[in-house]
Image 1 (cartoon, helix red, strand yellow):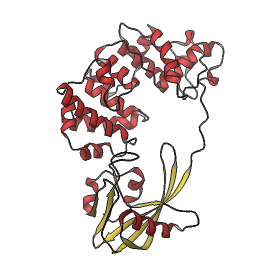
Image 2 (image 1 turned 90 degrees about the vertical axis):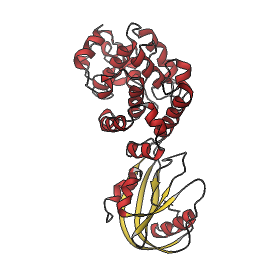
Image 3 (image 1 turned 45 degrees about the vertical axis):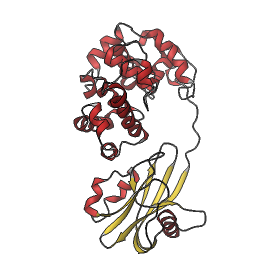
Length: 346
């Protein structure tokens, strides 16, 4: 009861909390995976304005959906979401299924998203277990299972189900997630304002700073990369990444990893030849960009290049364009490319 009262008076006014439409809630939960709320809000507004129903998303060209996702990262989310929208159109007549088995079977829908959407949209008694919920439960119940352990979801799901308010599971789930986000923070939790302070074992035993436990992550590898902006007359070469895998479907300037004992300039020429089949020469060094992905980081040297000879031939189901500068904004690019594109003469 104290948790719901706290949520009623202290919750953030977020756009997806203004609806019980399962599709809109689904959009928000997909976007919120691995992404902060403040980052998601403008993307959510733009996305739901253009694709206000699951049918509009299903019928849209994937590149348009990908462009609206540009910069949000974790692009497998939008690939799966677009595929799932097509399944909803083809199998369920454009109505988001509200039974666990059907919804959970859609591409990209895991236990967390299924529980969140079904509990919030239609009041079904499923408990959500995300990072915020795990942190609250670890402190509340003094749970020792590391929250980032591969099997932690099942371990934390059991107490989450025991604590679930089946009378209003959607409100309970939102309140518990909000508590983790706003009060039971990873560092410096605001215990004095916590509505469940008296029930928290970590607080009572003054062990809050020691919970939750987390497995230490391995050091993040750093890769050196060379990329070329290849000019042919007044156009530049852009290539599309393979549809699946990292950054699938996005467009980029060609390049790749620098080999040991190889200069960045030589790597740029070699990678462009191997990737596209054309020969180029380097005219100048544009900039160096640092960018972090989930499991690795890159330092990218960017060169201005001039086309010499050859026809573009790509490996696999990829595409390319010789694009005019004023056309580049039409294409979705990775964040690392966006960091230096502002230096080009658009």
